[in-house]
Image (cartoon, rainbow, N blue to C red; front, side, top):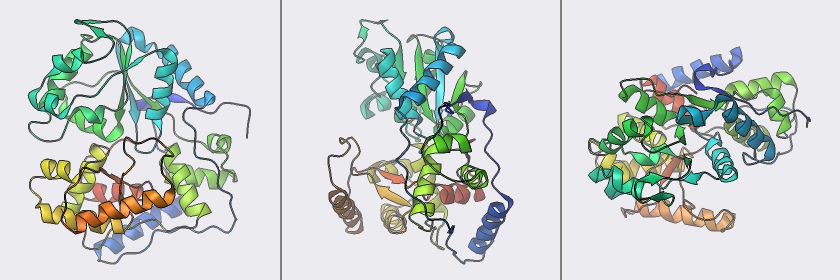
Length: 366
């Protein structure tokens, strides 16, 4: 551990992924070739040192909060009206922002309902917010997940297209919007002008990894940060899975096809979707095909059923959670529909990102 605080935030356009070591790039190219030839090889990484597992990174800790509060004060988001804080998958940025918002007395806005999105009921959404009286906003606010404000269908995008210009014009006052990096890339391409004032956590460094309790020499921690693309939460997941538990990374089936790509991209864009929502977003994929794909991907550790979505942390034991996930997976296999969201696993994220990049999907910048 070190006494210096190595948490940092930067303008999003300044983010540069740490370069992975040459050997890692060669392994990625080799895996891509094997996939092209129809051969799947486990993406494992063994090390000789025995490692102890550090605690998960605490994005609500005082050091993280001090960095966020100081940075946002320096860039004066309040003066700018609305700022975006980008949240790459597993980065923990949203949790960090929620704690900051609570400490700052910011109102956490409620996402629109499915009905409000379908009816493009922007005014109804605003008037439901607890700090709104009539049509006058009374305090600065926080949106902790912009992905909840749209669905990638023809009708599901009308709400955010009507809502975003009004937000950027300051009609709803001063706010901080936490936006998933994949959703931000998608919305930025769809938006005629650059979205203003976007920020993010700086790429993880060996010093920050050490501050979180991950031990190792500089070259090993640089390798870990490079493999995780500078994503702190992802670096910890890789450390725990590959370096501590000596697990192999999940691999996609050789039979992965266009439908697989549609599903994986939709899950990343929306931070998870239920089977019902996937059927709505991917109307070109038959329901039976969706069920087969979800079952196959879950069995390979690529995705998981988030049975705790909306539940209190620690409310269930590991055995209870596993049993419920098995039950959800079984219900898909038996043809039953359910509303449990499916999400990409942390250990599969890099594999999924590489797969989508090879199929020319729009990737995030992180």
